[in-house]
Image: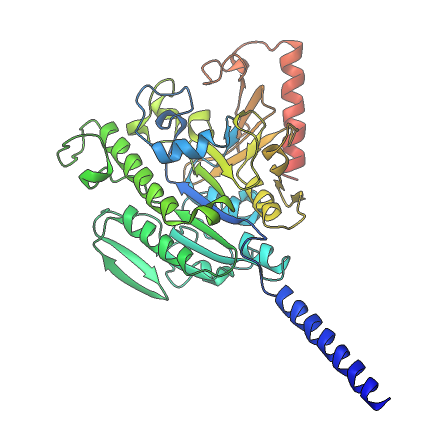
Length: 431
């Protein structure tokens, strides 16, 4: 009998050990259970300078970005803010700028805001390793305030956002700022590759390139196909330099993607976007150079968005109305958080696999030293209004580049009804 008791005890201990091991292993994030997330933000990239959109006659050679587009979805109606700082804030917080106080390039995001990365990890038992590499531009001149202050595991990049020289620039990492001489687009890619290769659990990489933002320059010759360009000086045609910077960025994106194993790439969703429209020096027809970056016209806010990879089974063009804040809940849902709608953000994960309607209105805004303006659209009609009450109304369905302000003549009943509906929704949003 004693032997039987010992045998039963041994069996019980064996099962208990197995059970404990299984429970312990369950607490370790499985690198294949949750998709990796690669968010790539291009700086000042308009629809007129990337393949897939009809705007612009001159397009750069971008085989790697093209693959992101052709293997997934191209979004035709993606709105950001017209300058970089508020767009990044909208993505990071899921909130419109008037709620966070970040509406212009000089505004500083409060460290009390909950970042997307914090939100994900607080709702997934810290599943993700998180990094931001590149342009930060949410801290003003405070170099001590970097993404790590908002719960991101790792940061390496340009705190103040801009560089004055792509070959000599200031890199901030671990609280130390040093001058770097490696071409900035290449250096940021190197850092991203190294960080991703070190990860042992699912990762979320936010890679914010400076390219193709000014200064116009000549990238390394092996990274572009624009020929032998002389050094850029003011007054020269800037478009070849702009295209060269985009091609160099694409070259580096190719390096990054090729550095990830096939198995890991299959488990990675890739999101590529521009943060706002092009600078006036490089805007192409049908855009008007005075109606691109820094303005609420379509050339300043309707920018490229491509998404492909893990979980994206649809391909082709998508016409749903999407805004920058929507990336917050979308990425959170990709990461496993049930966040269909939070703050000013609506998840559009459903579009990855089927047709659905995400939102009925788009909203954006800008406030700086010279302007305080907001815009709203239902996809057909678009209303722009400034703080003084001056308005513009456009019918985008037949006037996509806003050449005819309907308020310059008497409105039809339909137009008047649409305007009233937009004003009502605007008041709801900004209440």
